[in-house]
Length: 385
Ligand SMILES: Cc1cc2nc3c(=O)[nH]c(=O)nc-3n(C[C@H](O)[C@H](O)[C@H](O)COP(=O)(O)OP(=O)(O)OC[C@H]3O[C@@H](n4cnc5c(N)ncnc54)[C@H](O)[C@@H]3O)c2cc1C
Image (tube, rainbow, N blue to C red; front, side, top):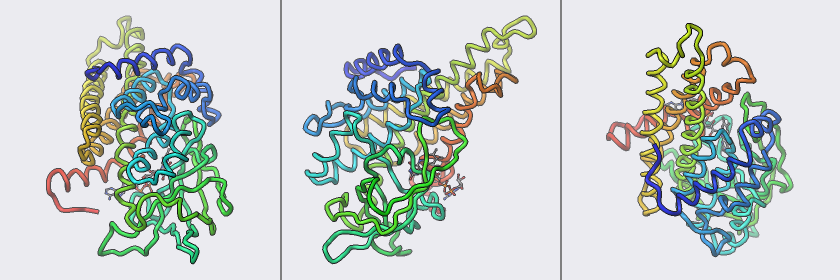
């Protein structure tokens, strides 16, 4: 079920259709196997103007709304054109537009619209995991006002391709009585002296790579702080909540593609001379996946509209991350079952969706803590974490 489309959304949908005619799933899969960015697809996102949507014209964008950006992710992933690298490029704009200085906006934003520059986002650390308040990466202010950054981040997507990274660091020690203070965000050029990386060997078919990133006495100029010192939390969530909507669009698109593959196979596979799709044990889980996808989609586009209207969408953004990951899990699972042994054949190209479904339960935030958050914020139950 499609969302109710505005004229601008129809225009985005038309652009997606032209892209789908120019690149196919096989091309993206080959790039994913090599863990390389599918350059042709990235250029099409940029050259057709999709990357410029959602960014005001004064900073090199074409204006437009969150629902249009979500739609682009949803539609292109529905064709199997998996490209998670677009997400960090969009998500860093939101805090920069809201909290950045005029100089930062003029310097960093236009490149995100043309695809010439790319941002990575560094928050996760090995020991603290989901608990961002426990991070140990720290930035100490020097006498001249600049900062010196030390610490280590992990799982960082696309750090090798990014020109800059947003790094979340402590500028004050952790205060257990005031979790929300002491975090700051920095714009750090990825080629800065003192940065070293180790490639992580993740068992995923993704067109990008993930890194452990070390920061050893990296000098960060004072003007590279994003937002206010020690009050990075709001800035951080201005990044993370939009990310949950964009990841939602991606999850739903991938779910749609996996479901379509399952349905197509169920129509033609007939070991007992009738299509397996005529058995309720096959048809019902496919139908449940469809219900889950369509329901999550309604919620997703509603949240995008509310975001554009300036509403706080923290609770809804978390629910969407959970719902869309659940929809992807259901769709990838039944698509796998329907294919029988062929599922395990790499050439069948279903394993990437199965793995991505599992991954979507953990990242960008794990589904368990979302349930704890909804229990607390949505139901008033005691905080459990
Ligand atoms: C492919 C991929 C790309 C990524 N890209 C980036 C990136 O670009 N930048 C970045 O900063 N990070 C990135 N990450 C990291 C990702 O955000 C983290 O993996 C995720 O936040 C979970 O952290 P963790 O893996 O340490 O899990 P942990 O925090 O160790 O959690 C493990 C499990 O414990 C349970 N759990 C943990 N806490 C709670 C709780 N409070 N309540 C209930 N259950 C809980 C959950 O079941 C959870 O799955 C990426 C990860 C992957 C897999």
